[in-house]
Image (tube, rainbow over all chains, first blue to last red; front, side, top):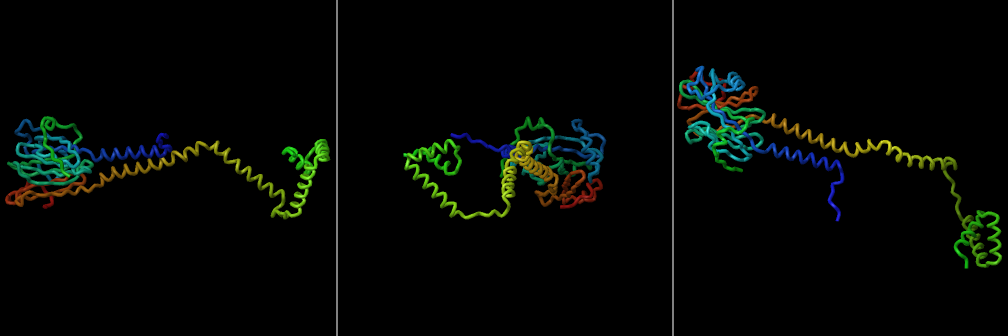
Length: 172
Length: 172
């Protein structure tokens, strides 16, 4: 019985390259690590909550060049979730009253639903490709504001996600 | 009975291709071999008939030119063998690397298209409010790569006049 052989070297190399391309494409369509950062915007120089820390300089610079008019921004919480394609991570807690549903719709696009006190407030569908950030925001007490900055994460999964069992809902 | 060797010798005798000794030997045998004599007569008759009936072929070119053409053709056919051995590396490159480079080029083009498709993905988002009482402004900053969504309460007129509220946002 003759052994099956792929005789031609070019064919072998071409198949190898196609396999690499396939794997690259598969990897491209895999999990999306999303970071949600809750920020408090204020004109006060200090936050009354000692747990709050100033946001990173790059984001502060971006916000200072944006329509937002607050002088200082403090990070309240930060969550990183790993969202597989076509899966919705539900009830991702960003504060006591606010939670997020994050769905990875593929191709670096997400559907984010913000819940306040258990009720959906706003849904937004957009791309996080190429460093793009989505900021959901609104006013808070005493001329301050809350901002939820959502972007692709480049850090490891947060301690919060490691400690919390986040429910998932597969959707197609 | 005449054997095959004697038949060949008779043919050679007829064509004057035998040495004097061999010819004498054949003639001596023929005096005692009537069967051989008959065969020689038959061969002679056949040759006479063929030479008389054969049409004369006239070559369109001279005899020298005709043979020189054959010589050149033989030389031409033997030449590629020698060249093939000298240029075997080129043949190898042509056979193996050119198809591979073509596939690699295609692969690179696909990779570049994949990378750029991510960059060229439109960043337009879709916002959906859960309540008619809520309104939103959206501002997209291509330079800062940010989509900013500002939520407000439609029933709260004070926010529209609030100087600290974000400026330059589009109402949705």
